[in-house]
Length: 74
Image (cartoon, rainbow, N blue to C red; front, side):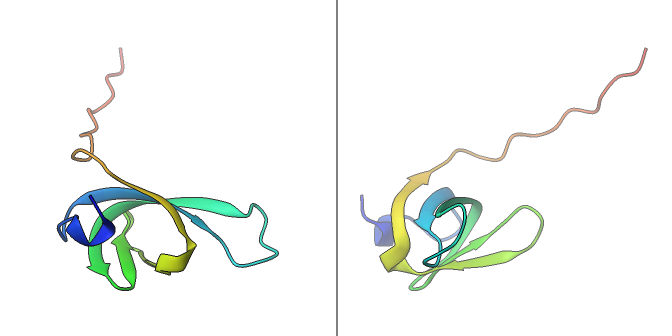
């Protein structure tokens, strides 16, 4: 499966190289795939992240975002 085969709206994780000289040099983004070229991911906090395709090292399809259960206080 190539990046273009992943349907828009799918939850993904992308590991990519940050700009030269960045620390750390790699980072990940998790969210809903909104665009293929450039790759655009909508994070859970509502921020959109644009990832240049030539910086992508790995891209993986994820399952639905886990639902949080309310904590119980005793």
